[in-house]
Length: 189
Image 1 (cartoon, rainbow, N blue to C red):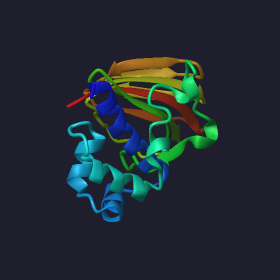
Image 2 (cartoon, one colour):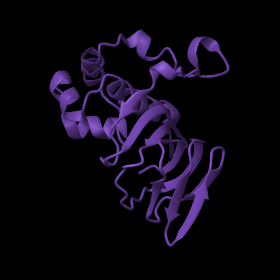
Image 3 (cartoon, rainbow, N blue to C red):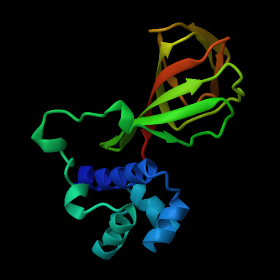
Image 4 (tube, rainbow, N blue to C red):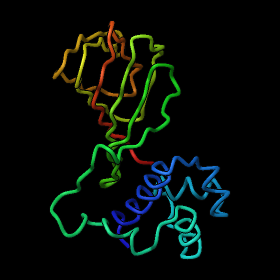
């Protein structure tokens, strides 16, 4: 089984778990698979045995044939379509005034790519954060200042910024709600 398929299985399980708003602990309890093993599977550090895989699918209420439907692209199409209504809110960074909605997640040759929509409210709490990779952010609505290290960039609708996420960074919203498209390029491992 190729690395692409192994990482795809882990990403798909994580995506289904998030769609059903299940924590790792909840999926662990429902599938009777340890939380640490689930984490390893979701992060492509191991491939589940068939009995473990079936337990996970049963807990997620997904048939094995349906699980693999979009392995290479749905219905033989040359693209993957993600509908707005299919986006799920995800918990990330646990900061007041920040709301993340998952759009797409994929592992490509050891690089995890996560695409999310971030909403930042004017009363958001701003604390520096770091990620293990690079970040691309494009403002969809509103205006925001983005601090990366010691530098600050003012971004308006349509502006984008790309930076090394290992540097402390955070946004500062002005007097309005801001919508941002975020693409994380995270190092696997």
